[in-house]
Length: 530
Ligand SMILES: *[C@@H]1O[C@H](CO)[C@@H](O)[C@H](O)[C@H]1NC(C)=O
Ligand SMILES: *[C@@H]1O[C@H](CO)[C@@H](O)[C@H](O)[C@H]1NC(C)=O
Ligand SMILES: *[C@@H]1O[C@H](CO)[C@@H](O)[C@H](O)[C@H]1NC(C)=O
Ligand SMILES: [Zn+2]
Image (cartoon, rainbow, N blue to C red; front, side, top):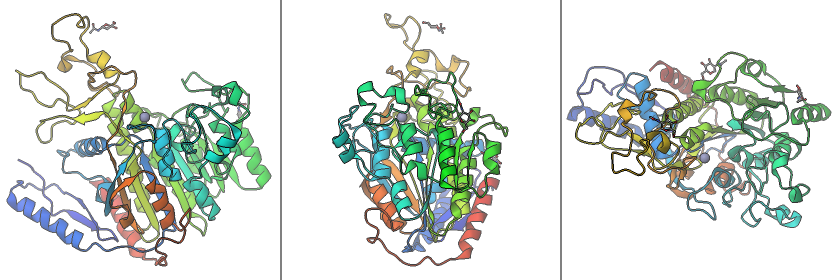
């Protein structure tokens, strides 16, 4: 029997969407409960109106690898961490008024990678697996100057800069990694993050991704750049397994000198304490890890350590809100994907929860009148949620406890390195029980415990089914439907009156309604309390 009741706190957003949090009161989930719940949700849906404002600001949140199974499982996990059964919980973006589905295939792959999907999301052009910021006409991993020039495609950040907006790029991965790279670079091979990774015959044709960030437009003109990648930018060396520069360039020094030459206020920072001191600088660069930033559960939370994705999002919005023309910000929760690749389900769900908290923080700091917020994933993963655990069962636990059936986890992967830890030693040539008994594995509670995978892959694969897109704010109704992933860049820029179709979308003036700020502040507090 459930001990939760709905009447609860339902907060009406401007677009008449209610965000409800269920307060704990003893009540059985009988028919009255479901009738009440149905009625109150209907009442809220009936108040739904369209918002025809143009967007002064846009924030594009990308949960890397945050497929629907990850959304559901992290929603349950977050509820369970709060002492609830979990299934009834909502993520902040679950209650956005407009939701669609996105087809993620690359032009040459049924199941995509992040470079190709990021090019679709950020540049409005689908392209090939492993390439970013170019269309499908340039051969992968090659460079010919004429073909290269012709293949380049511009991103949301470039379009926004051309329209006089401030721009920001925030990620928890290396800032030169596949997804963020598509926002500023044009590259025929996503691994060309450092100069030495480019084959010598192409060195004169194409710059590495890190150099493109610092030396080329739009990278050098981005106002707020936060992520990892100290090694790729030549600021530091270390035994992290990512690439290192061989040309001896110190790109953070070059970045600082170029800003000085431009005469703009600027600062380069490397930890949370320094990041929090930022205030009125026009351009800031923050590199918070040698390579990728630490997983949030493993983060040094001291001032000398890296900031959380929530801290970075809050600071980026503060820095971008100064300025008359509005801003375009991209925030990537980049390590949901990495945790999945290692079958680290607990880490992946934890990263997804932190990503969701960054979205809540952004909602609290902005108005539905003038700020479009879009949340999506670049692609899914091979994660599955198996039957039939009982209601409220630990989402990281076992799906059943029936003694006459093999015990398995609720969350398993179709492939990945978890195969090795679950395969019973010596069983390959035997008819005996092939797998270790997972209930006897002593590291099950650990952060880096690998969930089961029946096919060995060194790194678990992405999944190819549609991902969701959630939108709130001006003209969010343009996100209802099933879309090619490339549509997202077109819709976001159109609503913001910039990019390839600056006059196509509604241009209703933005009317300030101070109440929306109050509602969002209340929602934010509520979210923290419950
Ligand atoms: C690179 O330049 C930064 C200043 O931007 C400096 O703090 C750092 O020590 C330099 N790194 C190396 C390896 O020279
Ligand atoms: C940084 O974020 C963490 C949560 O991730 C929060 O506890 C902390 O207060 C934040 N710090 C600042 C200065 O916002
Ligand atoms: C299984 O074998 C591997 C080496 O092949 C070893 O590292 C591991 O400890 C063994 N596990 C058990 C449970 O015996
Ligand atoms: Zn991936």
